[in-house]
Amino acid sequence: MFAVEWLRQGVPVEKETSALSNLADAVATTRARAGLVAARHPREEPDGFRLIDRTGAVLITFKFLATHA
Image (cartoon, rainbow, N blue to C red; front, top):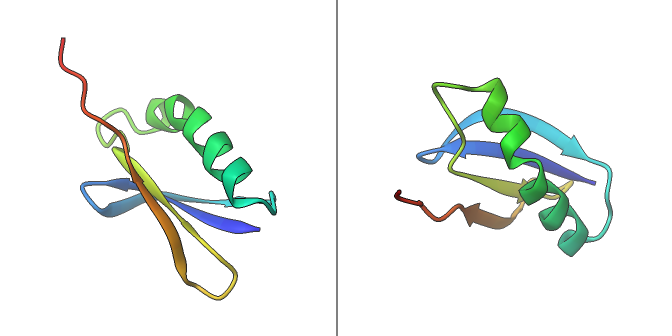
């Protein structure tokens, strides 16, 4: 299990729990959910997330690349 903190400029905008036990699977699933989370926060769209283990250690911080049209 992992805690997921969705971040906007390093500040948490939402917290979730992932029941997955494999870090790679948790990262892939969390990345796939980015659009759903952004839709819930129209003025605070997350620009990244971090995964935290049961001990509170941050395992990975993932920053989305900015895209410019």
